[in-house]
Every structure is written in C-alpha cells, then in structure tokens.
Length: 458
Ligand SMILES: [Zn+2]
Image: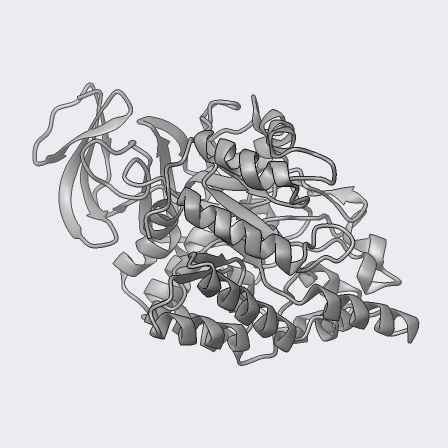
C-alpha cells in the first residue's frame, strides 16, 4: 500500500468498526488488520469519516453590488480545514446567456484555484427553447446532473412557474434533479418595497419581509408541480417549520421530495436581527432566520429523515465594507453567511454529542446523502474498496472555539464565535494525499478536480 491509516474507528452511514485503511493510487484498496504501507498514519483513538460534501456553496458570487468574500481558493481551503473534501457550487445563467456560457464562466473561476474536488449545479435563469430542447441534455452529458431554479429574487434570479415546470419535465426525462429556492418572490418583492417605503429599514424587517408562509407556499407549489411532472424535487436551504410540513406531507404520500437545511437555521433565530450596533446584518440571508422554537422542528426533520442533507449555502460577506452597505436599508445588505468550514464540527457536536442522532446519521447527512443524491456515489461519500481516499481523521476530544482566529474563511467575523465544539478534524486527505493536518493546509491550490456527476440515485 502507498499509505495505511492504522487503528482508527471507521464510520460510514451504516457501519462503525476498528480497522486499517490501505490506500493505493488515491483509492481505498484494502480494509483490514495489520496492513503494510510505505507511509503510515496512526489514527488511534480517532474516528475516520468519509470526506464531507458541501453541495451548496457560492464562492466568488457577484451579488447585490459586491462579490462573496471567499473565492474558490480561500473557500476550498477553509472547507478542507473543516473536513469537507468536495463541494458543489452554482453556475448561474444570466439573461441571453447559454448554459454553456454560464458554466464556462464558473469553471474559469474555479480552475487553478479549487484546492478540493468540485462540481457545479447550473441555475436556469433564461429558459429558451434552446435551453429546454438542447442545452439541458448537453449539460447532463458534461456531468451537470442538477439544475437550480429560483422562485425568489424578483428582478434578478427569479423565474416564473412555466420555467419551473418545463425544467421539471426535462429533468425527469434526463434523470436529473431540479433544486428550488422556495420562497414566493412576488410576495417578498411587495413586502420589501412596502417596508422600505414606510421607513422600516432595520435588519429585523428583512425577516418580516420574508414570512415563513411565503416559503411554505412556494415549497408546496414546487412540490405540486413536481408531482404533476412526475419528477423528483429537492428544496435547498429549507428554513421554516411550515415548509417542512409540506415536505413531510408529500413524502408521507410517497412523492420523491428531498430537502436540506443549513446550520444557520439550527442555531439562530429572529432575535439575532435585533442585536445592537447593526450586528443583525450578519444574519441577513434568504430565507431569513425564523422565530425561536423553529430550530427544534428542523432538528426533528433531520432525526426523522424528512430532511436528508445539511449543506451550508456558504456565501460570506465582510461586516465592514460589505454588510454595512445596508446600514440604512436592510434591502441593501448582501444576503449570505459563512459556513463551509464549521458545518461538520457543528453538526457532530450538536447532533452526536448532544444525543440527537447517531454518528452514522451524522455521516449520512454531511457526506453520504449528498453523494448519493448528486451522482457522486460510490466514488465519494463512503469508505469502501474502490472509493476515492477522501478521508477525515476526526478527534472526538479536540475542543475548538469557532472564532475568526481559529478559522480560515476569508471573512472578518464568525457567527459561531460564542460556540466551542468538542470533536474536530485533525487530518484531511483527498485521493490519498494529506491536504490538512492540525488546521494547517498542506495541499495544493488548483489540485481540486472537476467532477462529472452521474444521474441521480434517489
Ligand atoms: Zn444558495
């Protein structure tokens, strides 16, 4: 073997056992006892997880008059430091652009920069006949097997129901997956303008302009249209208990509806918008935080299986110089939060340490389910013979405060600064190569490979 990881406790979505892992040519080649390797790594007392997958990031996103603070280099390095070895970002089609042009733009941003493996979803902004009849199929051929549709952000990303419905029909034919940002964009547009006109411009009015009913309505509508198209559907960043109800209802009837939530909705609530000194701006994102008590419904969704994935929607903006563009008007605060580095330790600590779910369920939520749903399994998302040796050695005793000093994301604040987690990655490996050890990035900028994803396995 080129490398052997000894004595670790291997954890997958289904198993937990002590064994050595033998790695050859970047792949897992053996699982067993007393394996010999040119290089050995001792994992005594630690877990070995499959590298985590964040299938919802926005590196270098131009948005609301500025650009997300992490680019593909800083963002992917931070991801690796937090135990994530694969991310899927979004190539967003502008008006008059082909899907190919959109993909080229984003591929060029990632190229030479991404330090870990990556893929893209393509967001459909302009549903021409060409997109519907030709380009979506060509995208699938190029390994883009998921398409995003925005039901919100009227005037920029939002599309109408005809586009959503056509996307669903085509995706069904291609074996691809439609992902939706489910909020009623028309209602939000009206409420935002109304509140701003009335002089209600503090960050809390962001939440009041994005009511949970608007999310539930859009989720319900998307689910019904998906049913009509006989297509599966995936709801990104589900935040409200009211929207979760729609998912539950459909899943209980056997409809293939999938949904993710993100850490921010599990740890914060609308009270954070009323923090002094404009601190509330740090939590402005869409959908917004919900009222206290909502968090527990989302945890329940993760426990019961109605929610299948925890992703991040990582889209950080500096407090100074970006978030403060909206100091006098919440509607000008760039929407988004950092999270790509903190997801794995947060979900481990608050999920596993606090007894909400098993360590296997944790692996499933952060790695295995994203791999299966987004066509990366069995190459990614598990520890098995033939899979990529994307591995995380995780010390369950290591305590880390999630402060800016301890993190690598290119942003001037940490929303999780007050939290100290127990359990943290101490080594991250991609395709058999150590890329992070003890918080130190040892990989290579640009070494991340573009992943051509296969059809969805539901
Ligand atoms: Zn997003």
